[in-house]
Length: 225
Image (tube, rainbow, N blue to C red):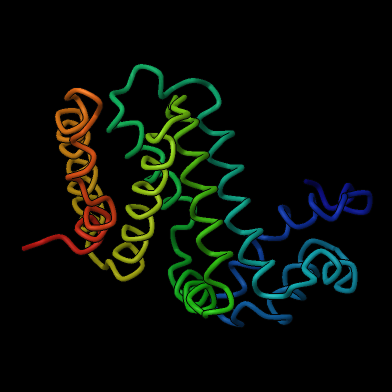
């Protein structure tokens, strides 16, 4: 959004517009008022107005940053480019796009994760992760409305969180270690889906009794060696 147009922007539009600049400033200032003022002044926005858009302070700033990545992802894949890919490739492409969208902002992410991990913020953090996972699955073409709707989003949310944790500390060339980690996690999901189909394929879906979903999520995040 051009600077001139910001004068008439809604608070929601202002949040999305300023969020990337706040994230860049957060590398040096942290997720605080200093970062907000830096971003606002850079965009020609009155800091007092910007503060109205982020009344909850750091948590609002981080939420807006996540929302801006969601919006960029949806715009990027709106052309249907995922349609001819295998499902595992669709998910990998979506997750990797999100990582590349915040490339160079590892320190901002570390600081954001520290804030998100605070006990009072955990519910909001989980909700944000679920929302992003839902957007990815919808872009990937998922239309499930039953048990699979929830299990897919829970699993992808776990994969994404774990991949972010690897990515933020990854110093390998072109984030090769993160790419390999993501590929392994997605391969694990594909094997899980096949196993689940067998487990639930019997009369009455009785196999579900023998599957521990929480245990599986734990294995995804902390794989056995």
